[in-house]
Amino acid sequence: MYFQKGFGLKSEVGPVLARTYQSAAVERLKALGYEAVAGGIHFKLAREFGFCYGVDRAVDYAYQTRRQFPDRRVFLSGEIIHNPDVNQRLRDMGIEILDESRDTVTRFREVAAGDVVIMPAFGVSVPELDHLKSKQCVLVDTTCGSVLNVWKKVHYYARDGYTVIIHGKHYHEETRATASQAMTHAGGQYLCVRDLVETELVCGFIRGTVPAADLKAKFQGDAASADFDPDLHLQRIGLANQTTMLMSETLKVQEALRRAMVDRHGEDGLEARFRAFDTICSATQERQDAVLDMLNGSPLDLMIVIGGYNSSNTQALARMCAPRVTTYYIDSPDCVGVDGIRHRPAGAHEDTVAPAWLPSGDARVGVTAGASTPDSVVGEVIERILALRGRTAGDLTQPAHFAQGSSTSAKASAFAEATADKTAEKQGYA
Ligand code: SF4
Image (tube, rainbow, N blue to C red; front, top):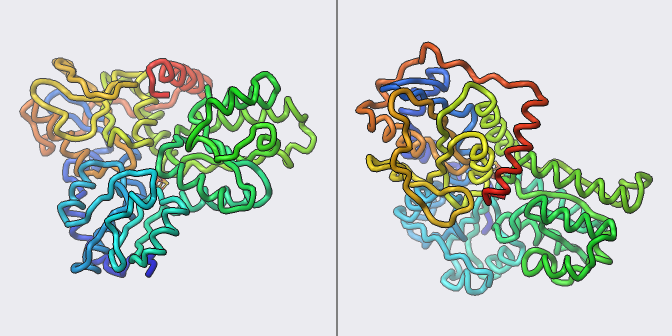
């Protein structure tokens, strides 16, 4: 059995989801125009943040699945989304989240015929899906429509003999799933470039300045199809991306590769060698645009970015903020304590505690959250910050002189963004 559209239980799980994931503090802040003050703290909330439509749907389906199959074992093929709070709640409902493993048989060894397996918003790879089908499980597929849209483009490329270049992290589930779509076509090939540095290496090969051996040495394992041969497989390329990458970087990757193809083969007939579609999902783009608006608006003392540390789109938001304003990337409300804020600095693999992070007196605090962070988590963070000043969300009022975010000129924005990218690279977010 294979389900892709839920079980018609939305009205039953809707109130539970609202109780679990909504937040009175966030609703109040929104009602006050996304800016509010209490105890000298001026909060500015991003216009778009938190749960995206794909995550909303995936979590909804997971709750519906539990209700539909109360007596069966229910598994998640991996974290449904990259948010520790949401995943823990699903575990508490008796849904088992399977451990990561590159080996499909190992990954699903516990799953037996008749068990229910939920596939996450970022999808699973073709071999994994085939394996689950062969096990005769009940499959609940929550793959987001925006991810399916990328896969559609990948199929066009691979079908027409273009090697798929994916701007993404080759180890990320979504990118691995996307790459696997290319391999369903005879002769399908793919290559994953994580950033502009890796892209420039590919461009160098296309222009004839980087030897094939260097490229092969760099792109190993999941980063390229098994028999990828630069000499054969970079003649015709089609670009796609992991949906949650930094939009500005994806555009630069596309442009760099397009220029390299023009330098090598000329403008004539470029269409026959190079294809690109914008496959950043609209939710990711809106969240990044909203952060850019905040950064270009009235000055902030600090920015709080909330989301799982393995969440690609949250990392992208932190990457945008860190070069422009003091940024604290946190993954849960517990990070905010009286002794300081526990956060994950750029490029670090461990948390650190910043003791005197909140300026005394008036403080302007920006808040945003990745697409897998529910309002309940955002609201709790706000409540905890307010508690440091002995206030609650009920004390929030509209600030008298907290200017609305205004965009500077396009030139200044572009400069700021370029500077941000450079600094982010240095800081290790790249
Ligand atoms: S971030 Fe975009 S692609 Fe990913 S689940 Fe959300 S809407 Fe879908």
